[in-house]
Picture: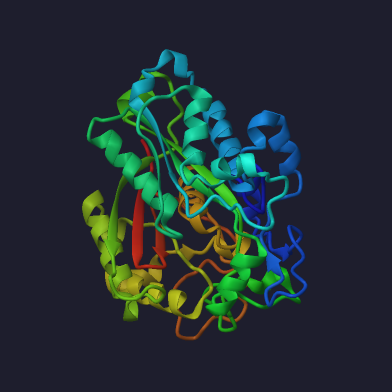
Length: 394
């Protein structure tokens, strides 16, 4: 994963469990006239890293978001020692969650001959497929901030149905630009706590005033157990199952009292054959908006009952912002690393909790705890809900 706290999963994870914030004043464009002047940008070293990995001619045909996804996928492949020449490339595919490619006023160096390619929604998955000459299913899915969670789940189905042996799944997003921020300000969705950027994203807090936009990418290599073992892969965790639901209620607001969210979580556990008491950690959607944090808390209480008070919950968005289309993938990586390392990431800036939100949100400091089952929630505009269930692999 790439995000405001690191340009690989190791650096990102270390900073996440240390409870650092990646939110700062915006540098990608002049935000002096915007209501919101803060965001969680990638470290400045990303540009140099992209130049090392991406050929110059190809780079000119990519937006910043596409470059993030491409770099992230290459690192995932290399760190997992995948030699595609020894595998059946027709049974390997790419599915990515993409809201848009991010071709905005913040992009530099765009000229008309590259405009169409840069704006192609399928560009991210296409470039990755061409990099390795893999010929299996290759497409993108778009469902707002649950997009990459959808991509992971559909990749799971491709393997489970026998249509593929390996799927490169995840997503990327970069919408730190004048237009997008003005648009979200019009919806009263973004934090305007510009004076203290590091404290602006404060899920479950009494003083929360909206989410902070982040950018980044997350990639997961999904394989059947048989395929992974045959090539000697390091297996991090098992993807147990998932649930999709559509609330069909409101284009922005979730169903009252988290009813739709609860249905999603409950169905995901049922599909995975997991009892509520077996869940050890929940990576919340946790956007730091009034309705999401309230309704997600109510949904968790509805599904888990009294057990809800014993299940640790945290929001990674408190540190890296809301990475929109990449959120589901990045937060899935966090769930997997929590399982592998037995550490729960914190929800930072939880200094004055909302008295109505009374669950264990792992406030401010990470916590050592064995994790056998972790779930990741993604609840998007349009009512597109996803819950993913991950298990420890023994």
